[in-house]
Picture 1 (cartoon, rainbow, N blue to C red):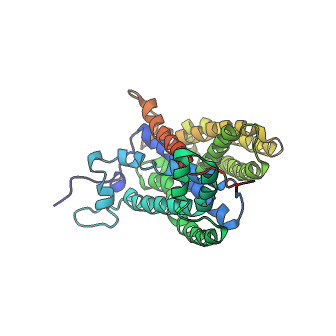
Picture 2 (cartoon, one colour):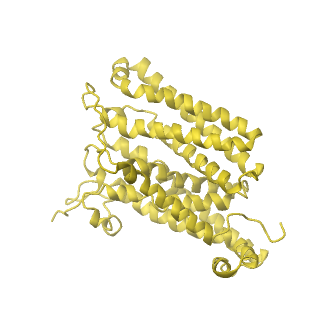
Picture 3 (cartoon, rainbow, N blue to C red):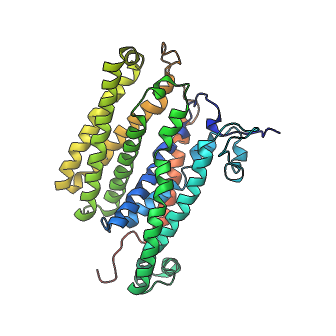
Length: 369
């Protein structure tokens, strides 16, 4: 008997506009933040930034499935994405669902990220419990998991390193998922011929991740920004910004020189692509300036988020408005409280991050530092 549901990508059909589709791709920046956290921890760098980066990453990544699940044909059966995933073709369900595979990867990555957080924060949670009072002190003692000495923390660190390596695999799967989903929609001539889409989308999401970190760090620390936290993140951000600008320009060149007819078809996308290049170059230059003047990092975040917003809008929305024949370009139709549906998942991620920031210390300072 054929089941009465299927997942979004099990048939080649249009991904009709839905605000959540746009927003949840921004939330995937949580996976990129956790990737940076893992790499920083394994390399021994960005020690002071790891707590904040971890909590932001978990906060955003934990709500990332709100988008894909909203795209199911039967949302009330969303639990089947875990209970009966379509990860292999069968006679009843010939399709293979990318989101079902990603759903399993999401569970694995989230569990590993939480284990990593508890392991790495254990000793510092204990330290924080010494100076905290009331309910917060009790929370810190719970999350210290009995690690009250540096000797015990050495054992917890070994566990954290193993977990940091293990969680890279499912996190990278989520980092490349949006582009994979778009390429799977073979009906769309733009996505099918956007050869650099996977790498530009991955770089773009890293820019979102670092921009969000700089934004939260600025409002949290104010004028007390620490250079050993801000400068390395700014360097990563600068690399991501220049990469997005270069890859976008290269894609325009590929379309223009190798396929003039395709360049003509994608002409409605070119204006925003030029804007993205200019804004990303500005973000790159501001990042270099902020290395010397850290307080300007707020401008870096605002400019970068504007550029990545335009880039994702162009890729996700405008690319769907070009007809299959390439002979027409339609206008986006937004109905009802679309802006509220767009902001709701992000608000959920921010709320979860703020809640986690109460349970876990956001600095790794020992008592007396």
